[in-house]
Picture 1 (cartoon, rainbow, N blue to C red):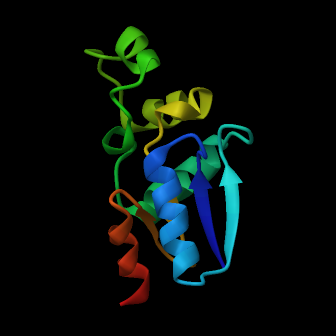
Picture 2 (picture 1 turned 90 degrees about the vertical axis):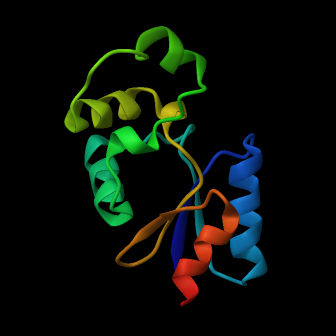
Amino acid sequence: MYKIYHNPRCKKSRAGLKYMEDKNVELDIIQYLKTPLSVEELSDIFVKLNNKPSEMIRKQEAIYKSDFKGKSFNEDEWIRIIAQHPKLLNRPIVIGKHKAIWGDPADNLDEFFK
């Protein structure tokens, strides 16, 4: 079973979800804007992604431009910021047993099937 952190209003997130569904993968769909992630959950996701939180920020979001652009934060601070403002998290993120993949573009998710 895989988890997908999904925003149904996001074209890229919908593409990632469809990609996994087309592979007939059993998914637990988590709409993380409705069910925000805790700092601990986010920390685990970033370890599995092998990415820094600062690398997974959606810099085109209005909240980023108004509150965070041009400011310096360490990675722990970014995790807390994302927990408070989940819209800043790049999506979709698909979690397997031991790793996670950012599904943009959707064919990045092929890494699960190699």
